[in-house]
Image (cartoon, rainbow, N blue to C red; front, side, top):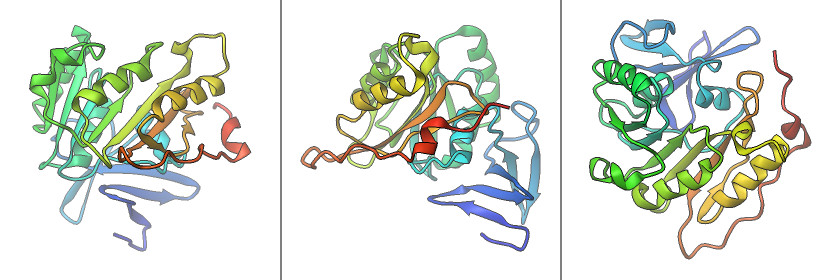
Length: 254
């Protein structure tokens, strides 16, 4: 969808659009939910369709897309497992992206944000909250069918191991997606953020074709978006991800 106002459908994700305004890029998702806003985000209507602004300062997935993420994104009619859904800020946008025919299984272990997530899910019928600990996926495995994608935003030292355990149990086969909002500060201070990212990607690369990770500053300090797609068991491992020098530095924080 392209118009004179430069309102553009995002690649491979037809329910995600960009609106270019001067030197800014705005992201919007075609919403499945109903007003009021989930977290104060803007809404608009266009050609009979309702859209919500996808704020990079509030969502690491949005920040990654703005930063140039070339990896997988949720698509219509897919099922996604969301680890660390909190109160649902990004989870509602993932629910928008998979559309009314898709499902988002949103896992959160803390009661207070889960209560807000539960209330929000009343207005996003394809968002299914699960009170559970992502470290123990067997505890909710009966509630989650095989999924097409896994998104994780869990600030734990072993966050990649948690992702791998959930993927092994619940993620589909070839071509299934893994996207991780990696918080390097949670992985210890004995290494730099870049080394933590490299270490995480090395552990994640077993069976996954990685795309270049992107740094999420200035929106989220010390975070990267990493991941890729599940590789066929018989396929040859890819070459290491190459990175332009500028990517490792990233933009300065506001």
